[in-house]
Each structure stands twice: as structure tokens, then as C-alpha cells.
Length: 379
Image (cartoon, rainbow, N blue to C red; front, top):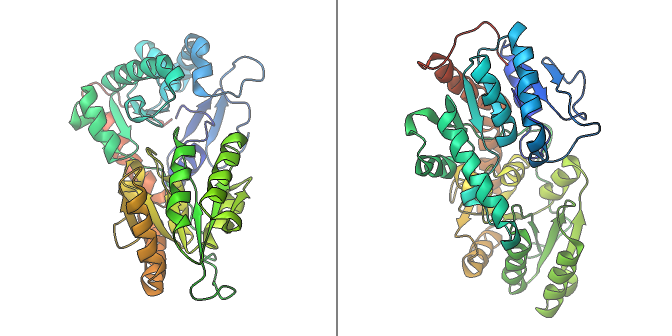
């Protein structure tokens, strides 16, 4: 595997799950923060600029060097398959594969054509789209994050036959369940909103507008450090203007444990992202046993079963969001049932062992394609 700590995908959990299934797994990364002994797989840190721990885009000037280092590694430890996470590692791996032929599986942590980046990042977006199109066409196989991404990759010109969906996984704590709400009255509800993606401040204001008209309902907005505090202040000012006032507050979370506690305490978790390839927050809410209202896009469309584990609403539709929240909050039995069903789905469909099986199928397909090269070890 080739990838780093970009916060989009838990590569370490996938590596551990594959190793637990008997595979010889090596993680190649330029990130110095990867643990030296993380589990049952090996980590090889590729030399990069001293102190590098930036986003994948920052690797661009180093791709040639990383490719040469991979050639040296694969000369004495040739892998069966290389799973490339992100376009920067994909470019380095494909350069190396030209010298040391090996099948490559490419994953993108968000497709440029589906992202909503600010206008001043248009040039970056255009470059990203061109690189992703090239990588998808040249990879032996492509692991799409979700069904929406699969169809978009086909639109890129990537053959459907070489694309499979390999979503993210989630760890389900068997001893953790949604918290009882005995401390609140039967008609006193709490909604937690967690936005992701480039348009997140706009999506959060939509949640504020939807909740403002719901009586006896509080809103907690999760701030994981990804929000500009000026945006947070604007959201709170809007809440005050709409009469939500002291019913709206911000919950700061520093890690997954903090986030899980907030999700478990909610009656409903809202995931209003305009595009989220993996839908990780929706999965975390489901694993916590909490009903979900999510935008019908990306990984959330795949994860949430409508009217079973939650409700899907059109992105950026405040009225649809308000109706969904009103319906779920007004039906406690339905709400609890959705939480239980969501927890079951997270455990059965999105456990890391199940995701490892999905990855195995994709790796086998890549290794047995005419362009693939069968070898003894898996990386």
C-alpha cells in the first residue's frame, strides 16, 4: 500500500485487517508521523523533505524521488499489488511500476469533478481533475470510494469493468450504545450537526434554519477544528437572529472518542455535506446507535438505508431537512429502531474485516488482469 495520513481514510485499519487475514502487508509512506510498530504490518517511511507532514498536494515536487525509492524497494521486495491512496502516491507508484512492473489499484479520496472548491482554487481543481483522469485510465484497477464516484469515474472514460467500490470501514465498540435520554423530557430533543466537505459552513447554516422552527429542539454543532472560527461566529449569529439563541451551541471535539460521545448523546445526527466520498461521520453515528439524516450524495447515499437506518434528503434543501427532522423527532419508536438498524448495518457491512474482503476482491482482479504481474508478497 502507498499512502499517508491525509485524514480522509484510515489506511492503518485496512492494513491491520488485511494482515489479520493472513496477507503480508507493507505500508509505504512519506509521513514521519506513522507509528513504527502499528500492528501486524510493516511500515516503510520513504525519505522526503525533513519534517514533511503536509497534504498530498505538497508531495508534488517529491514524486520523482518517491518513485525512484519505490523502484529500489520493489527491486528486492516485489509486491503482488500496490494499493495507491490519493493521487500523489498514485503518480509515484505508477512511475515506479513503469520500471518494476506491478499491478496498481488506485483510490481517490474525493474526485475533483464532484468537489465544490472556492473560486480561487479553480486552477488547483482543474489540475486535480486532469491528474485523476490520467491515473484512473493508467491504473490496473480502480477502487472507488462510493457508487457516485464509480459513475463519475466511468464518465472520466475509465472502463466500468476495472472499477469496484471499496468504501471506508468503521470500528464498532460492542460495549457502546446510544445514551439513554432520561434526563430530557419526552418532547425535548437534541440534534447534532456535523458537516464535511468544502461547502461545510453553508451546509451548517441550512441546519440552523431547519432546526430554528422546531420547538423544544436544541442544536449542537460539532467543531473538529476544520472550521474557520469566523464561520462559527456567523453561524451562531444566524442562530441568534432566527430565535435559536441559547438552543444552539458548539461542541469542540479533539478526537474520535469525543465525537462518539457527542453522537451517542443525540436524538438525531445530521450530515448535510454537499459531497462526502466516504460518509465517515454518518457511519460513526450509525455505529453509535443514533438515527441519521444525511444528504443523498456520495458515501452517505451508500451507507444510509432510507427509512431504515435514517433519512436521505436532497443536498441544500432546507425544507426537506426540516421535514425529515420533524418526522423522526416526533416518532421515538421509529427513531430508536433506526439507531439499532444503523448500528447493525455499520457492524455487518462496514467493519474493517468486511472492507478487507472487498479490497481482496479488487486486488485479485488487478493481479489476474492481463497487465498484472503475479508475485509472492502483497504491499
